[in-house]
View 1: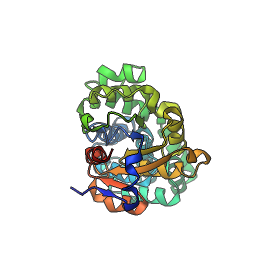
View 2: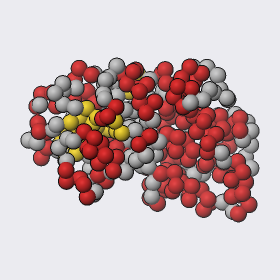
View 3: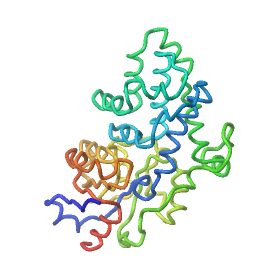
View 4: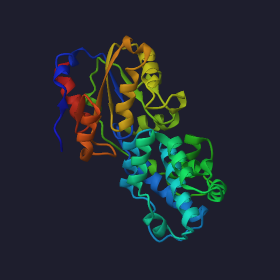
Length: 323
């Protein structure tokens, strides 16, 4: 596991921070067996049960989700899953392949697809542009007739919430799936005893309010909802306005935001470009416990993160010694 890295110029100023801001997934909770699995299983389900492909192998591996996170603009796992399904449909209408292994073997790979998304922009809108550019007029019609983004999202929600929590999380009972939700596979990574008792803690997450409440219950954390920015607030990472709004809620002057993906780094960088950013300084910390893992430490450092930590507890342990 890597060591804690802090830019030299921050060492003198970090004792002045007056707030700690946290992402949830990959920071507070390990979601590698919940959200990441929901992405791959929803893609597989749509391919086999909706498109009628023969199941001859996985369309997507859990590690493939990392390429989307590194590309940026896929903080929402619903968007990520829809982008993945779009590529599966595009390959199908282009080739006529009728089984999952054949689809998975076709170009572009997930890595190449997401690299092109990053080169051309970010997020699901760029993914859709790239896919439609690959298709003829007739293939586009076939694509449009097959793609059902609302259904993709619903299947994902049913995977995650299961029969026990889908209604409380999303307001409906499962229609397509049975059994327990994948949320039960989540484990706590944050040692709450390391949070400085005198500092307020805020959340900036791509989760909905109901999903965040569930996460706080699992993690046994009591962070006031007035200190949350969630998907329901309508401003998503990497839009810097998300941090601007959180600053307005909490009124801090100097905070560290701890995340685990490229969107978490970019939201800090984008915040600094906003007119109101002068009200508070926010520094970025990327932990290597998320989907990208320690293998991409250099990539985050080159992209400009000011702090790189093995996990959230490593940076909190350091802050405890200086605050």
